[in-house]
Length: 376
Ligand code: SAM
Image 1: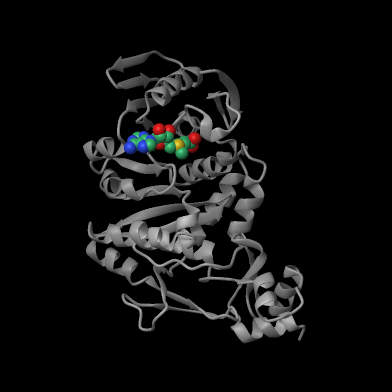
Image 2: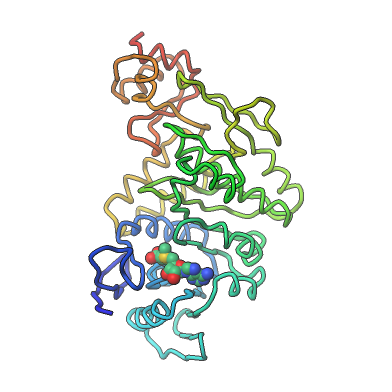
């Protein structure tokens, strides 16, 4: 395999040279540097002792956790032989000390302990019961096949970080696959990304509940065709019940008006869900994240503006896409900033949302938003 060296954050990483990233024998996507930047920031805020990068590929994510966060023990794992050899080379490139190899496992004891493993992530997680303070699942597609073992491998008050790149499934392009994989009915149209993210968190809350675990969303977002969530687990039957009480359903009519309702079962037909109707961020946590960003050099130039956008976003379920509303109701398109300003003048809260550059989040009722779009 022909390799090239790239710098990302504080890490130097050898990655396969390939025309298209999905053709490479070991996966590395430079666009995901933003995902890794935010993950490192999260790790800096929560200060985990033991971290697992369960699906590691080149090792870049785990290596960045080790170099850029206070973690004392970082595990990197991949099932692929080629990925395992490459992550060993990448660890040697970034840390001093000798690598001790034992079959499919290697250790490097330096300032931090780095453990490299070649094997199935489910097997590794099953062998390490309630061990990791931060467990990161960054798979191809859906994280669902790893969810049960991850919930058992993370400590009872630890943090689970997951990526889902099967956007077509969660956004309703393949509705039957969403029912099968996420046990929920998705929605199409302008709400599909927010609903997809909420379906993902919703199913995690449901899986967690049987282990008497609740989930608290530290931060969850959609970006570049993937979903990402950082969830703090909360131990106890009450916490599990509290999380389940944040589940509910969404309805939308053809004019774009949406309604939602917290309930275990939907009371009306044509419901989308079940999905998470609780917060998508913890305000105190995000404040710390923004502060942490001040002393941080991001690898991706959009990380800063994105963190700012997330921190300023109003945290209410669902949003109005001004273009979609104009189209659905035969109205002229208005500037998002003007709509926000007008809603503000009328005494409502309103903000931009990371789900779409043409959308707003607001606590104003649907009719008021339409009036503002009509120009009154
Ligand atoms: N986390 C990496 C990063 O930030 O660059 C990218 C990981 S890549 C999307 C997914 C990786 O999961 C691949 O390298 C693949 O070999 C590995 N993988 C797939 N199934 C696995 C399994 N059951 N156990 C462990 N690794 C697996």
